[in-house]
Image 1 (cartoon, protein in one colour):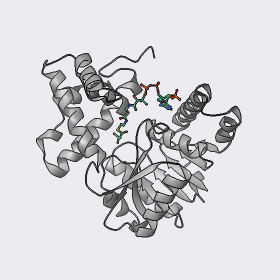
Image 2 (image 1 turned 90 degrees about the horizontal axis):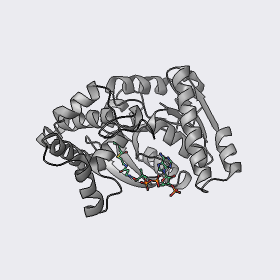
Image 3 (image 1 turned 30 degrees about the vertical axis):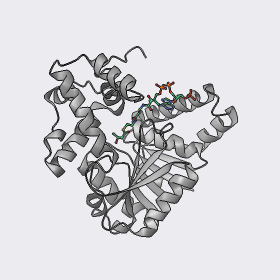
Image 4 (image 1 turned 90 degrees about the vertical axis):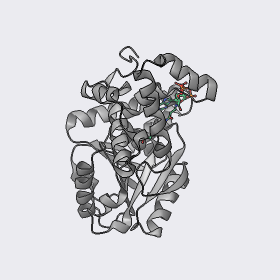
Length: 283
Ligand code: 3HC
């Protein structure tokens, strides 16, 4: 099987890595050669981490890299059996990609989006076959977290859902949950208001960021506190999801705190930019 992954950022490179480790040929498309090179380097680094932790043999590491093609030419996706889009959380950009995928891959088993928040129906509407369009929402870090949320639009065909479920579970070894096509789906509808309220708590001076995070790690056994988790997700992504949730439900709990807006405007995007609520420039 050959899968196309569109976008080689945090999520796209993680998805591509998991595919390659699971024996799937994968073609990652980025917008230019520089980004393609960075995506390949990120996947290689993460695969190297697998070797160091003893989870991946040298042989499997080499085989995974052989299955991986990273390119800046969209047409290199031609002939792929399925596609997973994982570009920036922007409806227009994603819609454009679905139009192009629809033309390039008329026989694909499914055209999936890893969107955190864009309605799947809006993406399906860009294609001639909305029945094949489905949400396939992975969680960061993709190689570590076992969940895939399958999101069905009102047009997604049951056969498409079966194909995605089979691929995610049997090929990638993930566990699937299914959600209707509402902003935030299951996980982000619950998670994002929590993260935003932690940011509001910090913004108001109510408690320090360290104490807020430690409270949830030691008091509730979360693997990381909400501010560190926001940094991991990426503050730009968090903001985009918050805006989608607010646009759909008008719930004040989903209004982005001013501090989040300012940090994104300043380019403080969390781990991926080297600084968010915490400093990662030396790690
Ligand atoms: N890639 C590959 N492997 C990784 C990794 C990465 N980016 N990050 C960590 N790992 C692996 C490590 O190699 C290690 O493996 P080992 O046990 O075999 O050595 C294992 O994960 C644990 O890592 P660490 O010891 O370095 O660190 P922690 O124990 O602190 O775990 C964490 C790090 C896995 C990130 C953990 O803190 C965690 O699960 N945090 C919560 C993450 C979370 O909630 N993600 C969901 C975000 S929401 C989302 O993605 C949806 C979106 O739409 C917003």
